[in-house]
Length: 79
Image: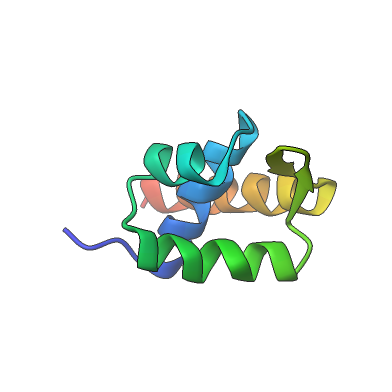
């Protein structure tokens, strides 16, 4: 089953909770390079992710987005 945009973003943000290199984050979010790059670059440009040499991690803004996505997911699970 294909994942939607928000599910992909959530999987990247969840992988970022642990921090790591781009390769590790891509691997943990189960994405091919093309899809990962598209969403990761967007998250980086919008300030949800920051580089903390040599790894990447969530910003406070990224943590808030992940929390909101988790809340929405739990709401949909209750339907």
